[in-house]
Amino acid sequence: MTSNSSKAVVIGSGPNGLAAAITLAQAGLQVEVFEAESQPGGGARTMELTLPGFLHDFGSAVHPMAAGSPFFSSLPLREHGLEWIHFPAPVAHPLDDGTAVMLERDLAEAVRVLGEDGRAWDRMVRPLVERWHEIAPELLRPMISVPRHPFVLAKFGLQGLRSANSLANGLFRSERAKALFAGLAAHSMVDLGEPFTASFGIVFAVTAHAVGWPIPRGGAQSITNALRGYLEKLDGVVRTSSRVDALSSVGDFCVALCDLTPRQMLQIAEDRFTARYQRLLSRYRYGPGAFKVDYALSSPIPWKATECARAATVHLGGTMEEVAASENDTAHGHHPERPFMLVAQPTLADPTRAPQGKHIAWTYCHVPNGSTIDMLPRMEAQLERFAPGFHDCVLARRVLRPTDLQSMNANLIGGDIGGGASDWRQLIARPTWRFYSTPAKDVYICSSSTPPGAGVHGMCGYNAAKLALKKLGTK
Image (cartoon, rainbow, N blue to C red):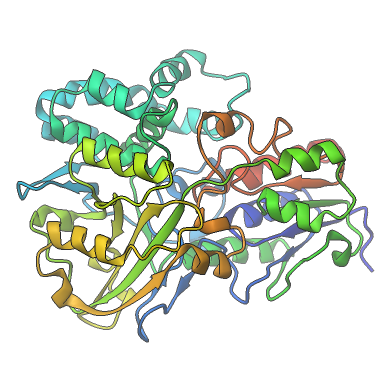
């Protein structure tokens, strides 16, 4: 029987849960991971959501933060089947004039393409691009910490503190560059007039040049499978179809790391937390939800701007003002008539994801948390706006409303794919000032509800596990 002096448990097998499990196993602990669903991965799963042979990503589809993750980069994931595919350009942002603003991976080429705003773009990102591998660990941890590269991060901080709207209007002259930056910043799922939203746009711009926005061959499940494969090499165990309703049900342990949001923590902790900490978790705010549609297609998306086929990710939203209006509507509980949309088209570079000659598309827009409004007509109007004839390509579609997303992954409260609102208040103290630790000395939170937040990077799990090991006195 395993002694509780060396047994660690991890609740949830998303990228953060698996990252935590690997970190604990590397330190010599015996690790068991408990996953509620029959398929591990959380938001990093690949499924036949429409028709047989069409492999869709349930959650994440394009992975700049995974490719740029300091922790993932330290692991031999390629030996366990993970292969990154890079498109010629990370992002395309089509406009109504039939052209698209392309964010090129090569920074010098991006500067050329952005014309009059090229130099401003260069000044914004170059210091971080050139030193990404040095500063990424600092960007991907709690904001309140002592930086090792204070001068580089100070410049980022001064720009990142601003709203995306303010930075774009102050830095760029052309509507094209402003629209491109707004699309990047809108990944925050926060009103672009709010402080700190510029930081999201900057980080996504930097990763485009520093590491690219690749897709994993075979889908997001390949990331999960590689992490699980390496964990099992370290003698860790992943138990699927093993929902944990109470921590006491997993037996004795020296430490438990939970890839769960605050609401689930309150449900499973029993009497381990103080009343004050319970109140703090109960006040944690969830962000907007996602309304997601997966498509099986007879042919590639017929973009009016044909250059969109060079990018894995396409941002649909038109001008900066339109993107900002869409995010403002959502933030204030409204449903935008012209929603900002993210579109991924992985089969343009990975034909293994669909039957021969066929394609898939992955799309979602932002909606108020828990929304029950059908956004499909508005989303397809946006697709037709930038890709006339899109309807004629559709073989099948699968609509996942916020409630559907939550039913398939309990962490997605009200369809919130970010683990909680990412406004400035919850970026600084996430989910509380304790960050990963709790009043129970053997229980930690390691989900995207902790720093640095959402994204398939594993850094929440890694950071939490390193803290737990430090308190255990284990190197």
